[in-house]
Length: 471
Image 1 (cartoon, rainbow, N blue to C red):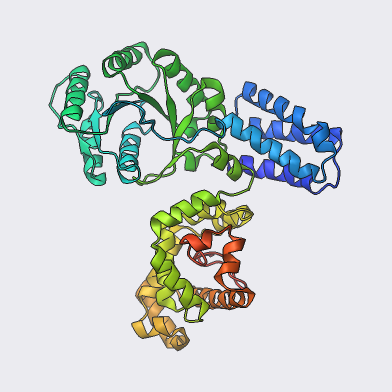
Image 2 (image 1 turned 90 degrees about the vertical axis):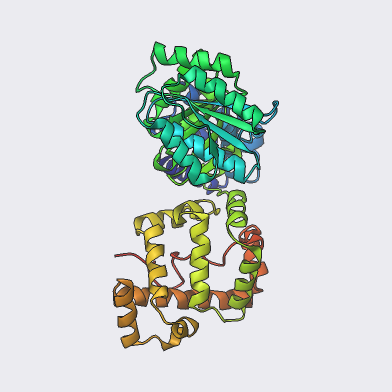
């Protein structure tokens, strides 16, 4: 998400930071480019105008012109303005639990926006991360098998869904859901409503009636980030009729522009609570403006990276691997362990985008077709080795390479690339040891290495060769 905008803004701001001094005309020219970049990212025109006016007023001020690093000052001003546009520093995202349990949450939106899947994703997150007991209730009696879909998703994520009673009306299902949630001692009860292909009076009347009955503490609009400004129009229509408390953007991983996210808060006045980043049940992030602004401007998001590492990787395992790497004992068993650790954290491009200054490396990964499939191929090659070969890579010569390639369904060239990558990683670790060990690397990574980060992400370009998977 925001890839095209990040490219454009990154170029504009980089040119400013390279200048020793800035004039008012420099800032004006840069803001003109920023305006075009925002409009091309499908940000609403009134939002763009307010943003440019705010940034320009500060960027041509005496504080910037007389600053020792005027370019960096402008970057900070743009960053702060983006944070404000996205909701402000104090917006933390997620469900507000400040109500008498069970906290009622009403999920609304158009058909096809991912409402049912998102309901299950949020319920899963509430149970696993917030330790809340959740009941899911499907009120969609129109779409074939919609209620069954929510029940199946509930079983997948181990979240309770209200038993289905055939031919029961949405209002009656909602009453039963409220009753069951209270009697069952649930912390949260989530209601998945029916959608339509377009906003119409009948849908809005039904949602309004359900709202009056349920009296939700949170009313979340689920909308597809890929539809751009249409999602903003939809959000305004729902907010005017039903009264939203927050927004969930789905398919944010497929939206390179990000205009919907940047416009949503300004147009509706309601915060984005979550963003969906894929089809998996855990592919959902709490929306935090300061972190998103950092990613847009190429500042990375080390906090999210460390959080994901801490959730996915056992500290003890990471420390053992670090010790072995520093002692020069890094073999293919260790490499396999590292590959699996990174797989738990998510896709490589997303992880690279969180590391400050590595936005270009993330693009390199995308262009060289390094993805989850290529990492799986690496894993297949290692699993085709004998235990002795994994412990001692020097044993792998011509005949063994052919056998490993055949066993993994790869080519000898692929095996050679993996061997080269292992050698490069070993060389890198030796260099780091000379620099002062993992402590030095941890400082370079903003302390992330000391909190469970694996030493080097498989698939990244090593010191001397092309990345694995490039054809």
